[in-house]
Amino acid sequence: MFAASVASQAATDLGRRWTIGMSQCNLGEPWRVQMNADLQRAAAVHPELKLVFKDAQNDTLRQRAQIEEFINSGIDLLIVSPKEAAPLTPPVADAFKRGIPVIVLDRRVLGTSFTQFIGADNRRIGRAAGEWIVRRLASNPRVQAGGKAHVVELKGLMTSTPGQDRSAGFREAIKGQPVEIVFEADMKWLEPEARKEMESALAVHRDIDLVYAHNDPGAHGAYLAARAGGHAKDILFVGIDALPHEGQAYVMQGLLAATFEYPTGGVEAINSALRILHGEKVPKELSLPSRVFTRENLERGGEQLP
Ligand code: FRU
Image 1 (cartoon, rainbow, N blue to C red):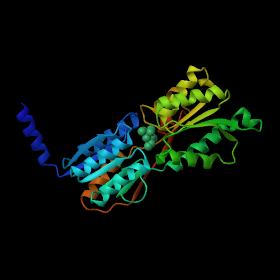
Image 2 (image 1 turned 90 degrees about the vertical axis):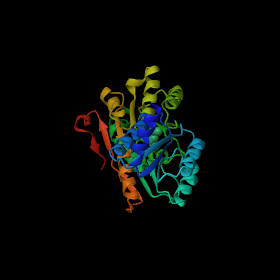
Image 3 (image 1 turned 60 degrees about the vertical axis):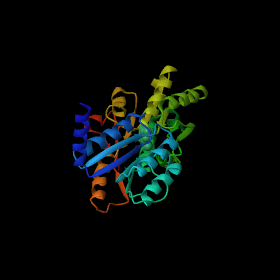
Image 4 (image 1 turned 90 degrees about the horizontal axis):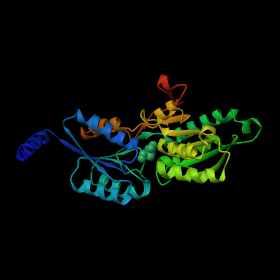
């Protein structure tokens, strides 16, 4: 039985020309589980590819070690979704300098020592979220009375580039607008952290109008804190990711006012990997589109960002 399964595994591996190592920073959020599933599904229709996953479990040092393990095991191409930009830059550059093509997915590293970066434009998403929030809060009583609406910003890990960009774009959009950030905190992309931070925000601010969270788990954590304190009905919640079974479902249930799509890039990464492995040149950046989902447009499949 054992011998037979080893033999059949060897037979399947015979047809495989290339091994791709995928270094995933964490699988705690549904969005990252979806990313791996998208990669797996796209690779499955190419028998010449073998895809090997490693999960760093949200630990930067573990992710550094896992990338080195991939390099030493002789992979043909590396896909990496790094937890943080600076500390993951050296191992990624090491792979690239040793001639292993590298696709950086979703979160960036520093510098240019990789083959291609794939991801949506987080600054643009942050700006679109800010513009949407300003429009949505125009009817707020405080704004109508000539004052400012009170907003909480729950940030993604600020040593990761999507956190930095989603904040910068948002702040660009609300500059000079009747919106005041009354509380901000780094919830590190994690729902329990977001819930804790929102409890702190509610302890000092009784009059929060809206929460802008850098991802849907963060927005949901904030919602749970507000609900527990009896404030959920008075506050609007906006998130990012828009998975059908997560953010879009929250919008449908009326928990979130809006969510902005952040595509995983899994399918695009496998397409690029194949092109690179076949010796084609690919552009240094592949920018993915995004949509906004609200109760009004959910049935139409959301609305493309301008
Ligand atoms: C999951 C996640 C997503 C977010 C992305 C940013 O770990 O936090 O929710 O959009 O990473 O890199």
